[in-house]
Image 1 (cartoon, rainbow, N blue to C red):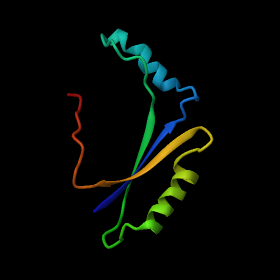
Image 2 (image 1 turned 120 degrees about the horizontal axis):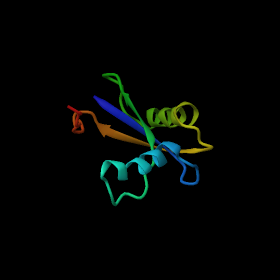
Image 3 (image 1 turned 180 degrees about the vertical axis):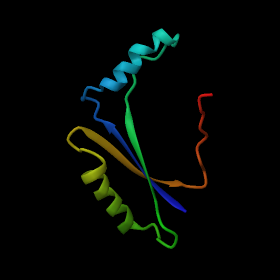
Length: 94
């Protein structure tokens, strides 16, 4: 299975209140050495079996990213292909 990932982040010149809230909370949690946090969004689009990843598909995802997933006035985005079989390790609170 093929996965196309769209990562969306606020542009550097745009204030990020969530990121600032995290930075402000870090000292209370005993964390030092981190001076900046930016919050973003990640969208994972999985292609159906039999759909070949080609330039047309990537162009459609690019259009989707620029019109629905991101606000290009205040956000930047990156479209990339990811191997769906290589799942990232996740930690859970317990």
